[in-house]
Length: 269
Image (tube, rainbow, N blue to C red; front, side, top):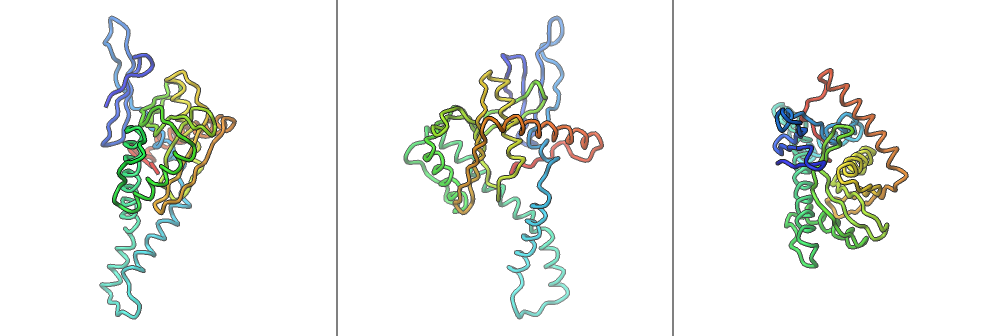
């Protein structure tokens, strides 16, 4: 996928398989039309340097405990081979849980995109999978409650000033605030501080590209059990959150320099 930005002066390419962005700048005659492509770090890759280690460690431990509980019956005889199988299963339980959660999140995001692009009709078929369905119903509930009206969805962004790229979920009007707002959907267990940084980075890039200064942000967590947790971030928080994101970018570049992070590391919770 390619997109031309900044009045055609920047070509942004996105490889969906590896979630990688490349940027080319339009050249001046008599040289080539486009300069050599340069890799641009994604917002989510940059924020992988921040992480949520404490919460993730506990989550992985819970996955292991749940797996053992499901596969070990009270009063059963356990052989050495059974113990080994339990240990191996518990060791990788987090991986299956992560993939399952990612699938639900991806399907929910896809349904929201299609629902919005269809004009948010009163009747629109919901996913059959119960957790995905609950998350989509929660998303629709929030959009109805704030009288949300989208301006654009799934938009690739690039900050020419700070050299990073990303894909924004939505920009739209929220009547309760009376202003255009960035909206980012989350299916994570909770809202983390790095979600604030993520939306600030999107605001910066979108404002650069469009010339429209968007300063209102929403992080809307839609749970797989139907819970709804919207977080409104007012304009006065934007500068602080962007400064934190740029500090994370410095840390990311430092770790990349010493090959601590792989280029395709992603955390899109």
